[in-house]
Image 1 (cartoon, rainbow, N blue to C red):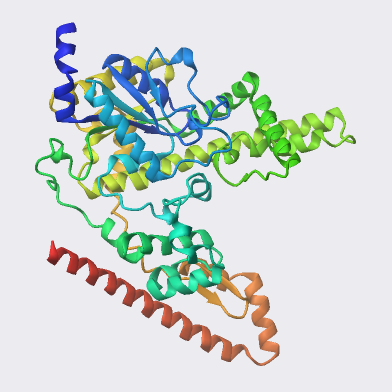
Image 2 (cartoon, rainbow, N blue to C red; image 1 turned 45 degrees about the vertical axis):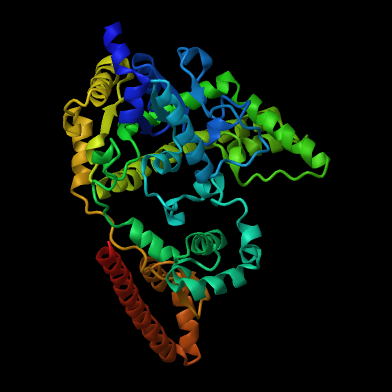
Length: 495
């Protein structure tokens, strides 16, 4: 066995075949444990792909793996940046992660990328991920991962101009995206304009190009060419649990975090903010570690501690309420992580014909970890490293079959670039899509305004204007779709 492993892990062989194991999944499913299992079995090193776990000194709030559970395996990009530092941009993470992967390969070891910040992971997995679509990120994700170029405002000063001026510029260079965003979505408007400056092409065109399937053998000289637009000879493990079981597990984990010192860490963060404010230094609590689950939810409790009128009973009630908020936020975060995998990661793999590299491991019953997780993952990684045949991902478990069957019956998302904001000029309210428009049109608030207009004899004129507006919107959607289809056809002809 030792001789076999020695030949398997030779630096020359690893540099040629460029294997990569990625572990994804919701928080609390056992990603870190699986990564350690794989790295221990196959002479690997682990790269952290969780933005919050990069912060130093907060192991409980950021859910860092305890040292005693690392089994001596080197972990990179974890516990490595200070509280005052901004979270790493996608481009910086990708660059450093790719450097680490090359270094690990050069030493004949297997890189294992694991973490819950899935847009980090996806930027590393795919060769042609030009830009991250702002519409794909939640508000928390956008805040935890700033725009790509730290010098953007220096290069293009208009990005720091008043929001109205930024929107005016975007309307000139990319009217499709300008009409897609709500006028108050200044971050998304700015990002769309930034993409235009960075790429020389409208963001709407960039997104349309990214949605087009790429040829499977785009890089003939790459040993991993069979993986299409994947950078490496990749195997992805999705550690997944049934919803009710995962929720119960997450709630118990929050209780365990409280016992281990969650409130103590949150208190230290609060003290850090207060010390800085005493020196007239404002800490931006809208991004980075300050939006991590377990700090912002506990803020009402620490505020209450300053109120001398609060009784012990009232304080305990607030404390319990805050802990419940942590549980709810954790559950919601897990849901968003699963949604990302099911939609963004799956669609990315489907577009390059590589969904066969995504394997679901059922961690619902952690007592049966060896049979459900360890044994199948070891067989699969061994097959990957030996260029052996890989099984059908649906054959691993009933959970895998049901989950993948559901995905395979869903069509890939259609063109999303032709959506447009619609403004009700009477209520002075802007909706970002037709569905919201229909809801607004049937809302009691809108009907009250209509009644008011009727009393003034203006209702008929108003309805005519709104019908004309809706017809113009529908025509715009059709024209935008034709324009994007034309761009795509021209691109295919050139290629």
